[in-house]
Image (cartoon, rainbow, N blue to C red; front, side, top):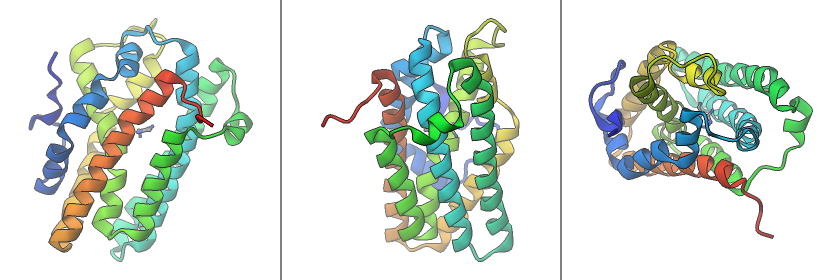
Length: 237
Ligand SMILES: Cc1ncc(CN)c(N)n1
């Protein structure tokens, strides 16, 4: 089935700059949706070792996402923007803790195991990319680098919902699938994409171009995150 990911049909507003970013990411966006890890996660055939690998790396990734959004909050001058990014950081930490509590118990790891985990090359590179953009980019660049994280998953959750319908209780990854199709994310996306667009309008053309590049890089890193979990990536030396 052709993924509906580049169409206009989303239950939240996609302002012009966000649309430009999405179009720039085109092929990588589709590739991330179509990765073998995602297909296996959706049809339930993914082995639990790969899922465990993904979840543990992801718990650490979400800590970096929370750090990046916290840094962005310090760079916002508008109090509503500041608060929104603080809340986004808080939400990422809460989600991470829920993942530990739920899948951690089932898959046999705890918060200490996650803390001691060696990050894969791809995870480390993605984290550094977000944190560096948050520190050194203009506001629109900083936000562009963190946007694919929620957007790609929300898009994927809604695409899978359209394809699969209700998730059977017996599905091994039902909780994960249910989480990213939660309609509460539509409001989150409205707020995030509105800010991305507003910061782009306030930026100069060169910063807008750089922001688009950072957005595309994050989409590529999203593909690489699935891939590292599929191959259980290790450092080559
Ligand atoms: C790597 C990654 N990207 C996105 C998400 C969804 N917030 C996540 N949990 N992990």
